[in-house]
Image 1: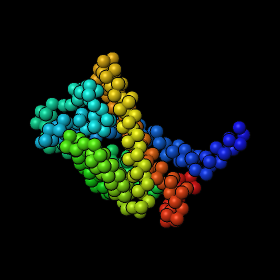
Image 2 (image 1 turned 45 degrees about the horizontal axis):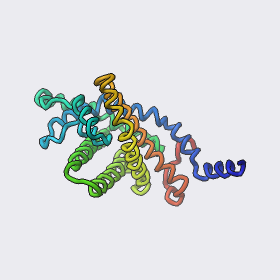
Image 3 (image 1 turned 30 degrees about the vertical axis):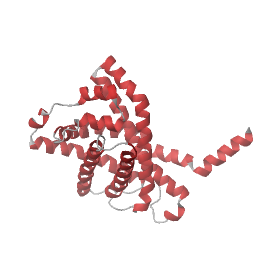
Image 4 (image 1 turned 90 degrees about the vertical axis):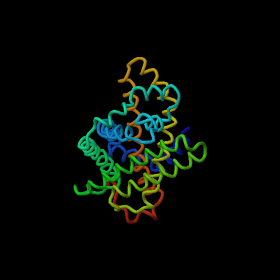
Length: 270
């Protein structure tokens, strides 16, 4: 028994898993994930609702984006759509200044993601005039979400899975590089992008088996509030995966890719 415990301890130390846990604690990973979810619901969701309601192709609005991301189908997707989808009149009652205000409120969401990446790579905060990067990232994020819904009914099976995997890895790969102002090399950021996409696939599976029945139960028991709580819980998971994927990619390079990390800034705590 002691031999097995020593082997497990040796494997744990060789993997550097303890370092990964400490870095996650130093980064306040769960706290950042909860902040990500709150900002996504308060600042990003209203903007996406207006954009989705203005969709000329009528792909189902903001609720369709959420249902696709959460892997919902059938009755649970219909419940989400009935509660969250706004009427198309929202476009007619929203002025240009209103859209600009929503976009301005959505930019801090990109700033939160940028700050998390900077902390992961031990970089100083970017200057205020780099706010255009956050706005650009927000636009590309919207386009990425839109194409995910656009291809849901147009493609099936391996083709859709392959397209989603490729576009997802490319978006998170480019997103880190862009928000960090090109201070970290492309190949250093690739493991984090792959880890992020892998985590989102796992979260989608978890959502399918856990959140699908919970949405129906909460809608019956608590109404709209119950569904929003499920969506908020899922967004916390998304934030955890995005920041955690970047952190995992940095940890992987530091512990198992030494010949690629000579020009990287020292990780936090060193």
